[in-house]
Amino acid sequence: MRKYMSKGTIAVFLCWGLLFANGTLEAAEYEPLKARVPIMERNIVRQMMAPFGLTKTATQHIIAEGKSVYEGKGGCHTCHGLKGDGNGPAARQLNPSPRNFTNCQFQKRRSDGELFWILENGSPGTGMIPMIPVTINEEEAWKVIAYERSFCKKRRR
Image (cartoon, rainbow, N blue to C red; front, side):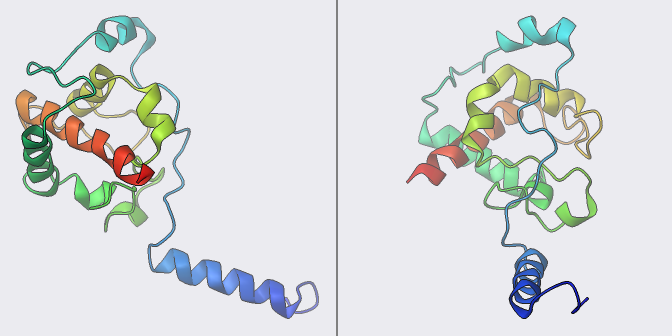
């Protein structure tokens, strides 16, 4: 190995390895902007809205309830992390890695209805399993979506 790499190059690799081992790097998502909802359902799903008017201006109360579900009975934090960055404790075992909700490009590209569809049906080709109605109900799902949306806003600060 020494024959091909300088000491500086080896140090960089060691630093990257330590950062990754400590879970401080953002998760490398597989095609983060790719739509997961089947094309035949997309138009209908994109028109779905939360029953309590979530679009862009979710109340702090709804976001707080979503956080409670995300970190509690929904168990979302296990894979997606408490910071929503896709670096939860179970993330290392998943390939591809869990969704990074701090990715504002992803947040802008996906509608609330698409996120709801994923919670209801899972995400084919990933570790995301269906959550509705097994783990959470529909109302809780909409609240989790409101909380997930807040991760992009937190990152911009």
